[in-house]
Image (cartoon, rainbow, N blue to C red; front, side, top):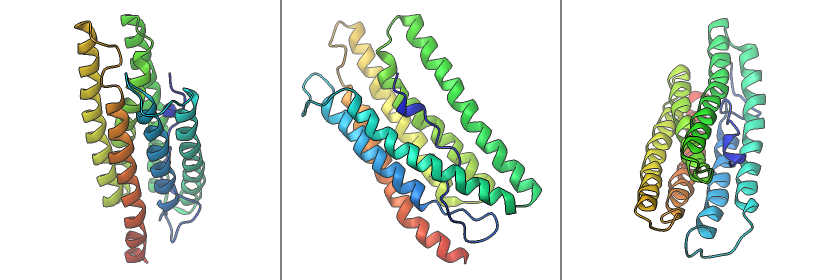
Length: 218
C-alpha cells in the first residue's frame, strides 16, 4: 500500500488569510501540483512492462509524500487560524470538513484493503490507492467549495473526481486483462499519467487562478 497516497490533504489553505474566514490556497495548490507532477510522473515513467526509466520503488511515493505533507501542514495551520476568527457556524463547518478527511480515507483504507485481501491480490493496492485517494479528495473539495462558496475549489474538486474515475477505468481494464492471462501490469502506468498530467496540471492552474480570486475578494 502506498503510504503517501493516504495522507489527507485536510482543509485547503496556507499560512495566510486576507480577512475573516478567507483562506489563501496558493501554497497548498502549488505543493500538490508539484507532488502530482513529480510523484505520479515518476511512477508513470518507472512502471509497466516496458518502463522508460528504472527507479527504486520507494522513490515516486517519497516524492509524492513530500509535496503532500508540505501542503497538508500549511493547510491545517491556515484552517485552524481561520476558524478562530470565523463565526461559530462557519467554524463548526470547518471542523466537520476536517473530520470528513479522516472518515473518507478510513473508509477508503477499509475498502481497498478488504478488496485486495478478498481477491488475494495485495499488488492491487498499488494502483487503487492513487485513483481512490484522488476521488476522495475531489469529493471533499466539492463539499469545501460549496461550504465556503469558493467556485475555484469546487471546480478543482469536480475535475479531480472525474479524472480519478477515468484512471479507475484504466485500472479495471488492466485487471480484466489479467483474467484473460495477459500481463499483470498491462496498462499500469496509465492511471499515473492521468493523475500526473491532468491532476497536477489542474492544481497548477488553480494556484494561478487563486491569486485572481483573492484579489477580487479584497
